[in-house]
Image (cartoon, rainbow, N blue to C red; front, top):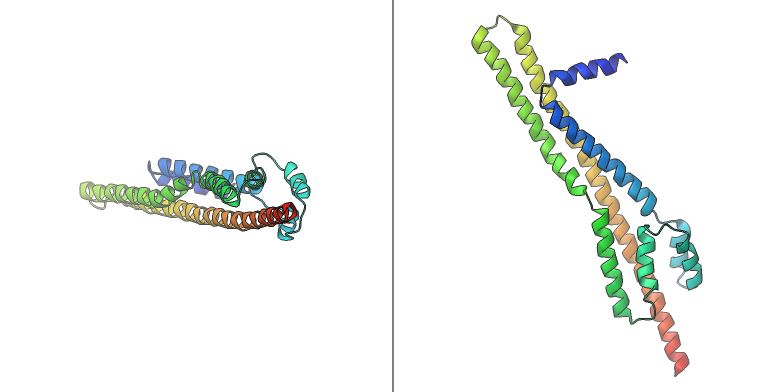
Length: 215
């Protein structure tokens, strides 16, 4: 409890610039929590689904059974459904529909990541503004009172340093979050593309077998 009180006192010493910095911290934290939930709930690929597609010789009904157990908002379900629903179409048609769906999914996964990227840049700049304000306060006291009131001078310096530190901490956390979720997005899209290729290859083989049977 005492540590929390000390932290609160330090933040108050940071001056008015702590208010927008706190707002940026809340926004960054909210986005990272939302992204963590989205990737955990709607972008996780189960081993059962991955292993089935990797076998090449799977039955479509087995795949459809697994997909039926997923939420309609699940990104892999959306992508695979776009392929399966067009499996009787020419391969170029399937690839086009799959690419369109993948683009929509990539856009959804990247949503609000630009905000984290903006916070990475904005937080240190706001901290720098707080630094300038704090140093101006310290120099103003020195200019008007000499060194009669050293407490006021150290208060201005403390305001400058605290604003800088808070801005840098927020930027670092947002940077780690941005890089982590950007990497997760890239890995998800790569895996989706790889498995989509497996599905289309399976469809090509089925279509080839059907062509042989008709001739």
